[in-house]
Amino acid sequence: MKPSGRRLRSLLLVVGLSMFALTGCNSAKYMPVLSPQGPVARSEYYLIIWSFALMLVVVLGVFVIYFYMLVKYRARPENKDYVPPEIEGNSRWETIWTLIPVIIVIALAIPTVAVTYKLVKPPKADAATGSTATAGASSNPIVIDVISERWKWVFKYPAQGIETVNYVNIPAGQPVDFELTSDGPMNTFWVPALGGMEFNMPGHDLKLWLEADHAGTYQGRSAQYSGRGFAAMTFDVNAQSPAAFTKWVQTIKQTKPPLTKQADKQLSTPGNVGKMAFSTAEPQ
Image 1 (cartoon, rainbow, N blue to C red):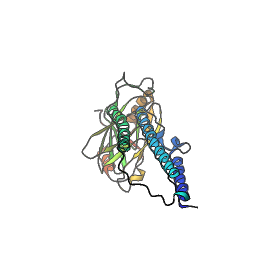
Image 2: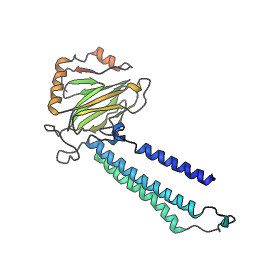
Image 3: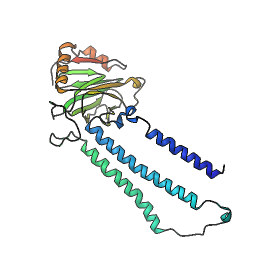
Image 4: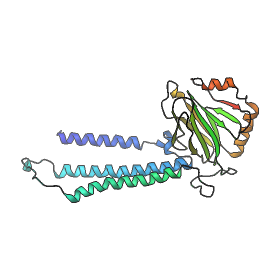
């Protein structure tokens, strides 16, 4: 096989494997990012699709030009001694291949900036779109403080007077305002099916709002390596109907022990623990 034939065969193999990896069967099942379950995740999903479409156009364009050049300027017996003439630059083509990347960057930047600013704060009640609100859900966001410990997640509900560890329950169809900080190394809070990620940083209060369209359980995880217990630093987000959420809050307050100094010290001690829940003194 000629060298050009081997290169072509290798190129087709790489392209085929890449497309298979990107569009494998049931990819959404194994990649929650491709199966959005809330308005935040859905906005980011459309942005991913738009970016992928632009990149696909670029890749196809490069392949078309590549194969055109292979065919048009391939070596033949009748032109084996051909030497191309010296030519000066072509201003028209140089302008075209300079403008094309600029246009692509603009096409990526505009929707990215628009989505980023759109997701800074939860939408107003009359502007909320793209979600299936659950009957009885409030348009006002519920506030949950998220503290990343080593190596566990602590969720505090100031208005409800409860606290959970390694799992968080939220009302479906209602925005949730997560207030993120860290009591250890910097970490990253991520629920792929509901939206993007945000940092947990010591001494800082960063914000991330998410919303679930309907009841269900969605896996969350740490998206930044933070030590030996990092692999087990996962949590469940349980979206419930508003009535079920209210009932769950009352059950926690009535049946779970109060958060003592000893329990709080245990949570701040490095190590992995299971799911826990506490009632706090009074709602804040």
